[in-house]
Length: 284
Image (cartoon, helix red, strand yellow):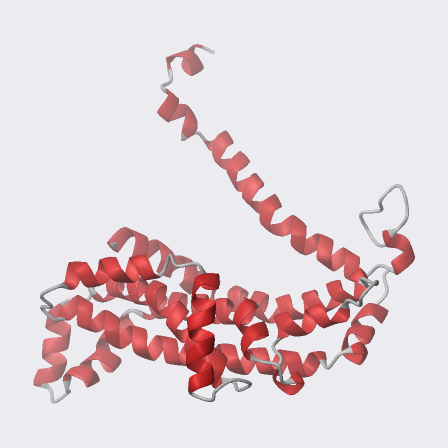
């Protein structure tokens, strides 16, 4: 008791019990919705209307997953989302690597202003960009194509990815690049053979963020694409609901199928992502 009384508020806030409580709150906030969707996907329609509510499925069934693939071309939605997310991620990394290298290494006159503009642009709500982007895609005759989504997704992910990579590139000693260029590398060669490999955690972090943003995006995918064969997963999932019917178990099954690829990606690269975010925060 005396120790608690004599402790300052800062010491109390930094104590292990509060850390565990904070971690528990974050875990529940992130894990509970995913578990609820998973349990719902294994229930029948009758179980959802029972009172009192049953948290766990009484008789787990995979029929909802079968129905999710039979009612709608879920495999096609997955393929379209994967290709759009993958291609936009590759393009985002290519452009952001070049932009970040220029900001980190070249003596740009208005470097601070450019970084400020990048931060400001990243705060724009997507809905404010919808009409201009739609008009641009229509003028270029790109509506109902993958490119109509790949280009905007790349632009939307560029600010965050560029800022992440700038902090990493600034931490790479210039002497390593100079040594590579003395050995015959061009500046671009030194960038991709020396700087980028040494900044692998940052590159993986930027890539994961760009992929997840493209995978989850709904508004642009709905607005720019009316071709049924090119629908992405977020748009395809909303087709399961009818005018007066909401088959929540089937919708939950489709959601689980959509969550799994991203979850696997995060699990595989979690160490690089965590180290990338941590190192980027320290260097920034």
